[in-house]
Length: 366
Image (cartoon, rainbow, N blue to C red; front, side, top):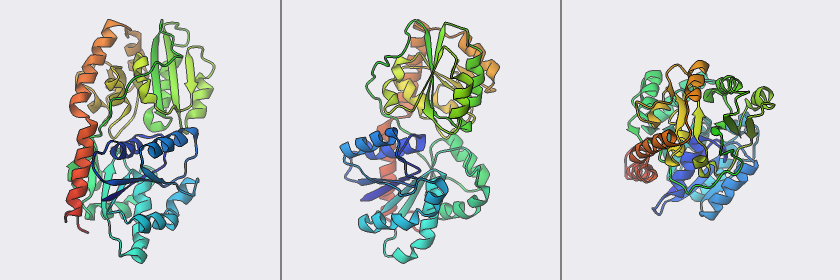
C-alpha cells in the first residue's frame, strides 16, 4: 500500500508532526510519502528532510513559496508523483491541504484510472476562519467520502456543531517519548519557562507578552521564547530588550530539550489537540495552560497550573506561586503518567493503519 501524507509545509507545526510520526513510527510495509503544498526552505525544514531521508521516507517538494499560489496550483505538479506512485490513500492534514486536494480532485478526471481513498484529519476546533465561503464547497466533499477523523472529542463536537455532520472516528494524536538532552543556555538557579511553537494569534502570543512584561525586574525567572510566525516582530519589539527573556528561532528536535525547562507556558485560545504539552509531560516537565478546547484534554482534569479565563492576571498569579524542585517534580510525574496512558504513538499509528486497510478493502467508497 502507498499512502501520501499531504501537509501544508515540511516545517514546524502540530499537524505536520502527526504526519511525520505516522510515517516514521510505522512497523508495517506501507510505503509512506510526505507531500507539501507550500515550499519551505528554512534550516529547520532542511533538518526535517534529512531526518526523513535517514528513515527512508520519500517526500515531494512544492515548487511554489507563495501560499495562495501554491494552494491554487498544487494540482499543476502533484499529478506527477500521483501518477508515478499511484497512492491508494491520500491523507490530508489541515485546511491548506484539504483545499488543495479538493481542487486537484475536481481536475483529476484527467487521471481517473487512479482512484484513491481519502483520509482527512481534523486538527483544530475552529476551521476555515479566514475562508468561511470555502467551507461550503470543501466540507461536503469530505463528508460524502466519510473520511473525517477527529483528534479529540472536543474537535469532533466542534466540527459537528459547525458543519452538521457526524465525524465517524476519533484517533488521538500519539507522541513518541525521546531521550532528553541538556539545554546548555539555561540558568539553573532560576525558574526557566518556555513558550514555543508557531507565533500566531491562536497560540496567545499577545497574552504571553503581557504576562512576561510583568516579571521584567524579577531575577527569579528566565523566559525562553522559541519558534517563528507572523507575530515574531511584535514579540521582539515588546520583549527583545528585557534582560530575563531569550528569543530564539525554531529549533529542530526541541522535544529533546523539554526536560531541561522547569515549566512550559501555553496561553492558547484554541487547539485541536496540542502536542507540545504532551511532549513536555513525556519529559516530566509541567505545563502552564489555558482551559481552552484541545489543550485542557492533554493534562489531568484537576491540573493546578490552568487558567479558566486565559487572562494575564491568572497567569501572573500562577507564575508567582511556582516552585522549582520537589513540587515541580511531583507535577511532572503526574503529567507523565497521564499522557503515557492516553497518547501512545504506537496506538495512533495502529489505528490509522487499520483505517487505511479498512478503506482499501471496500469501506469509504465514493
